[in-house]
Each structure stands twice: as C-alpha cells, then as structure tokens.
Length: 236
Image 1 (spheres, rainbow, N blue to C red):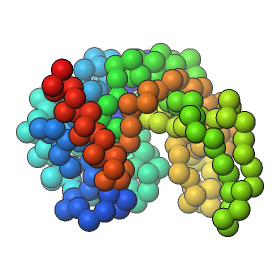
Image 2 (cartoon, one colour):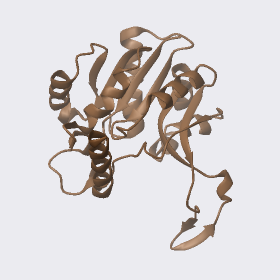
Image 3 (tube, one colour):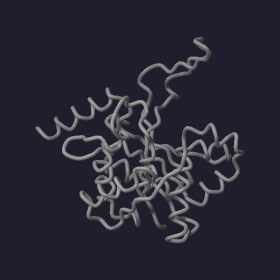
Image 4 (cartoon, rainbow, N blue to C red):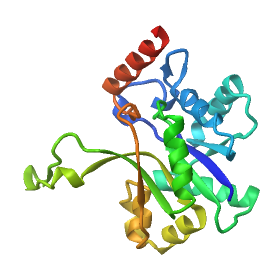
C-alpha cells in the first residue's frame, strides 16, 4: 500500500475579509499558515509524496514559500481547480500520471488552514484507510445542532448522533475516483464535502476522532484564536 498526502490550498479565503492574499498564506507565528500545516505532514515518513494544491494565480508564490521553508523533496506544488473537489481530483490525476495507481493506494487529504493537526490524527487516518475505502475526521458536537430553512427550524437532531467534520479525510484512491465518476454534474455542483462523494455513491465512510484544537482558520476571529494558540505554545 502506498500512501500520499494532499494539502488542499486552493481556497481564496473570501470569509477572511479584506486581506492582501488568500488565508493560507497569512502569517501565523513566524511562518505562513500553509507552511505550519506542511511541516506536520513532513514528519510522517509513510507518505510517498506530499502534494500542495494551490490556486493557479498563486503557483509561483506557493513554490517560493515551499522552497524557502521546506527541504523535504517529497513536497510538490501543483495547481488546483475551480472548486474543492476539482482541486482534489487534480491531485489524484497528478498521482496517477506520475506514480501510477495500484488497487490499495490511498490519499490523506487535509485543509491547508488547519495547522494544528497532530501526529495522532494523521496516524489514525492512515491506519483506518488501510481497512476502509473512506475515512472522515470528526469531533462530537458540543452545541445542539439545528436544521432549518427560510429562518424556520425544521429539525433538532439528537445531539448524541451529531458530529462536526474536520480534516483529514482519507480515501482509497481508486474507490474515490469510481465514486466521483458516478456522480451527475448536478451532484458535483453542490458538493461541499469530499466524503459526501463516497456517501452519494453508496460507499461506507468510517470515522476517526479529531481534536478541538484542530481548528480551521476561516475568519478573522479564527485567526486570532490560532495566533493565541501559537503564542501559548511558544511561551511554554
């Protein structure tokens, strides 16, 4: 079994507000958020390659950052697509064209803006994807989840069965490709989560536990929290 990592850095960060660059390139401590994330994956020796998939307009900038901060030759920068799952499939295409594809090959995909991922979470994903075609990282929901539409509450599900999704999300690559190719264009257009590709195709998705600190830096408030975490760790 060959395992690859794919760090999804294709977002434009519109919810971060008026910034000079996408959120993954913003500073966090002494390094950009993206680099903080890449460094966690470089520590895992089982990855054959670590793909960083970025917006085409930021390709040179991303390559320059990786060259400046990262010495591991497994890290490769490529361009993503228009949407998250286009970006994911661009990475799969690169793997297939450059390394070939065997039946049990797997990919561990992660948001570039979740820099506090731990070795334990990565390890649990690798172990799980050896057994299951699709793996999602989740934490139990703390708040009550309310489902609604048009400013009306339609359902309040039982919280014991509710989780908040994180990343990594890990997949057997051939299963993921087959599932994606089964979807209609309409289904592909509304996908907001990669594990849903497998669910829509009838594949089971296994879960591993994430951690509350494995936050996604999406808004200015998230960035403040992340910087506070970094400062705390530096001062310990």
